[in-house]
Length: 401
Image 1 (cartoon, rainbow, N blue to C red):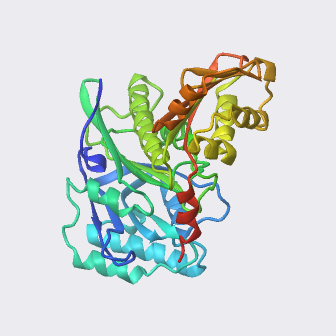
Image 2 (spheres, rainbow, N blue to C red):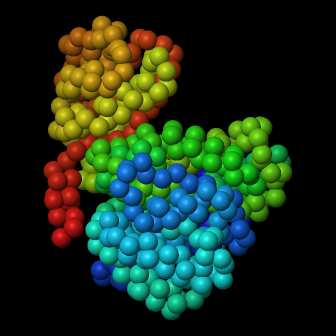
Image 3 (tube, one colour):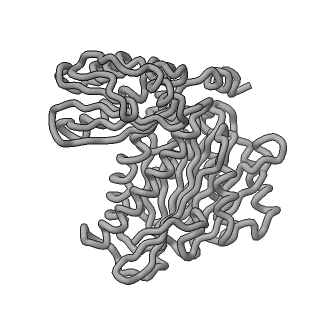
């Protein structure tokens, strides 16, 4: 049993959250989020593989290795990246401000930032906002936390589910942000998850890695891997289940729910790609391995030529086949079939005569489904992306200024 519920990161027992306008963004927009557990929680995280990493990533990566945390503080509007020693000083001060507000050990606070790279973070604004807004987090504040981490996002992204675990009702909630600079080699731009199950740090990290690989690691908007990507989870044990310490049936139930949460958040990010007009799912089937299917799906999803053709509603299947060919996965072109929705456009690596009007109608929809049959095995994977429109260039041509 698994049901979607309201509440986002505050749906699990023992969590509070909220969002503030600290002045980092203009016009009084929310730009500071805080998520906190009432008790210290088991923690896990996955971070960007970009060699250029923001100070919050460096700090949180170090702290999460202990497997315990109690809060996450995050700002938007400034990435706190590539600013020298000032970056780590600001990250530590952010953590300190949250620790003081919550009256917890500073080492139990994880930190994240997103926004413009190369500009020093005015952390004094964050410190002042925290000091002047007592009581801004509560059990209904998940939505404001989701809004406070947005940059070019057009909508806030949150989800929560409840599920049964050995007769006990448990919960997972999550928020995410991401719209551009999305080609995660770990997770999304930022995503924070909470759960009230009891689980060991080792099993929580294992579950997060599995879920992240099958969700956030299968989306792309523009092929750019951020300096600030992080996926964090806190598990505070307030559901009072028997602690999950191995790969037992309870772990599998939790893993299924966690993967669902991550996948839904990842899809929201793909739908909200900067300037996007269409959501695209690319399903690669009959592959030799799941890894091969994923790699091919990513090659197609990242192709600018494929994405612009989808924006223009042009059934240019040759661009899809070409991307399969340069993916690095050994294929046999004569076995490859391609479908746009339910319309076959390529069979055996050769184009078919198809109804161009029907193809145009399929590509005019807000959701486009592409299936690629490889004829090489029984494994499959789906990758999610969006089209490339004129607005993507407009948005990113003046992002900093």
